[in-house]
Image (cartoon, rainbow, N blue to C red; front, top):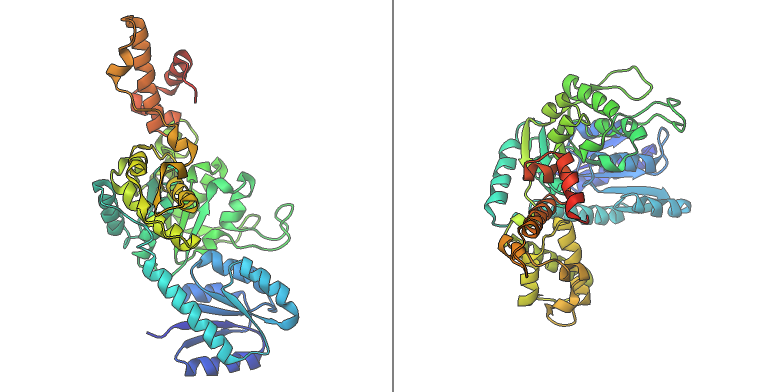
Length: 446
């Protein structure tokens, strides 16, 4: 199947030169003399690579690059620039450009860069599902089956799981098995957006709509049109933004901040949260009607500590990854470290595991990761006590035994909930106020 290239330049000579040469190379070519129509074209057509001039008559090429990478992060963009603008071209690399070429244009040079970029893109696409290691635990195998089942539909999916457990990986897995696979996947961390700017970031704004709005700006929903938008930590959105999001989902239209113009949108919505949104609804912090719109299909992502021997499968994957990055040849964990890894709680989940493995590989002097390579926190985890161990002490004081046993149970629930008090209270089948009282009475340090 022919690969499709979009060439954006207002110089007709360069457009004709590249179009004729690249067609002879076997590519399907689209050309534009301006930058702003590019995103619309990319929503209508499957584009494999973009060649873009830095200087365009209607938009700065660097700004267009940013918009393209937001809408389609995996698409390679090669910037074209005059020799005098090399510093600017280097800056575009930092903004996500694959490479840049200087004018005058030599088609053979561009052809070599295009082939290299497309090979890399193909490798990434082939590995996209493999990057998410499922392991063999029944919980994860069931989750993957459910995700692939819901993927071809347009149902809204809510992914719940602890921080670092792989929520964005699951969202990408769903997108990559959907009918929108060839379109954009736009991921937004709602917790990283200042609340006063959330509406502008999601839906865009017009010039002069607020202080600092010096230009019109398209939001993430426009950039994701035709594809999938992933809203991570959606529980952080303000009530006002939740209202606008609900309208966007129900009516499939948005309005930019400060504008009355209605913009139709067609996006698949996947959202995620590391807290129980139903509890947030009960506490008046999240709209119930929005929750039900988001929760057409729920995926519960189990924490790493509940995946059994999958911990060692993930460890080997991250170890191979670290060997490649650090130019090392560490074979694995010694027996003592393997047991430490299996016993550790991993409240940071996959993110924490990857960081620990990479650090350990860097420090390792031999073929195996040893205890000396591990960070201190893995050594300091308390030995899991049983209830009988807690109540049997030097005395048979029933009051002391009850206190210790109760403290142990509350501490376990807090660890299980990753110190989310609402979730811990639910595990203990008490309300939050009672939990707070117990924490104080039992002298539990958080």
